[in-house]
Amino acid sequence: PYRILIVDDAPAVRESLSWLLVAEPGFTVVGDAANGLEAIHQVLNLNPDLVILDIQLPDIDGFTVTRQLKVLPRPPLVVLLSIHTDDLSKERGVQAGCDAFVEKGSGWPGLLSVLQKILT
Image 1: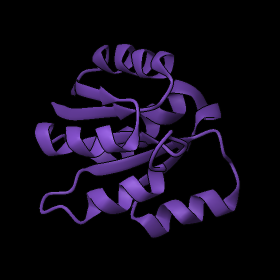
Image 2 (image 1 turned 135 degrees about the vertical axis):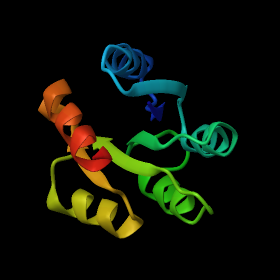
Image 3 (image 1 turned 45 degrees about the vertical axis):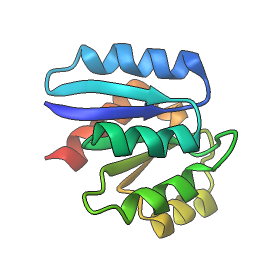
């Protein structure tokens, strides 16, 4: 199964995503984080295959976290998750090295579709 780390400052989002992911075959949630520094620390300790990462975090934004993760010797796939739907946010995500960008408004089917696409 793919090992996933969920990063979002909203506990309800982390819990909901975790609950939805564990119900899907092939996914294991290995941890979660509420901010960017914690996310980097968790990646170093847990070595997830994939990080679902909110852009707006209380300390380091998701773009910066993505750049830091992508220089690791074995970088995880990064899916940025955001309420922002503007082209600038998507472009910043691509420049940071994200593997996919999902708008929170696309809901669970949209996120699941992207996860299946990048993991196959």
